[in-house]
Image (cartoon, rainbow, N blue to C red):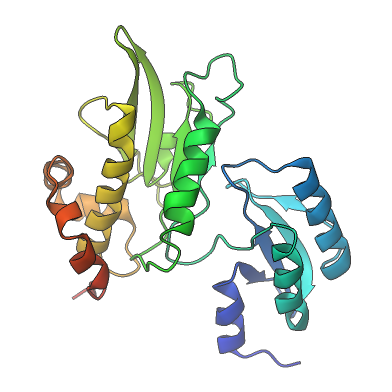
Length: 254
């Protein structure tokens, strides 16, 4: 069949990317908190064999990509996955799959990274699934300063730090990696665990209100100013205006 751009855009929003030079697609299965159970892996293998070309490819955001799925079988593959507790996704100008290191079991891990990642997945990756952002937004949860998951190169990075008073957290905001590299701006103080979710939500609200459409968070911070960002994050004004911010149209670059 001859695919239109509307066809390609429709399935891209569902987590399916076109395989170069073909009318086949790769679908991304998103784990909860970066963890797949043995039964989910069995179901993923069955998906790959039944709908794709039999290959399963891990991505850098810890999803599993299944290439070779024909366009006309995508909706069937989604239903097959959902019946087995699996979810396709991980594309578009929204919160991307949340990643974490193995700090839950690692000897260097200072806290349960996968539990925090799972909570972020449930509250924001799923809870904000319908929220349009100016660009992609990546979140990484790191267990210690070894930085295996590279929190400082994500839009919002969390890194455990041991202090005399117990575990605290260093946050990095606005990091990017790729064609444009930017080290995330280090939040000027270590934070308590209970502060992380409110600060994450404020960061995404600030991003939505201040970034132009198709502008990454780091670029918006460099344009508006780090001091302006940090001042906004220390206030509850963004949370108080949450509904207004989410209802407003995205900013267009002048």
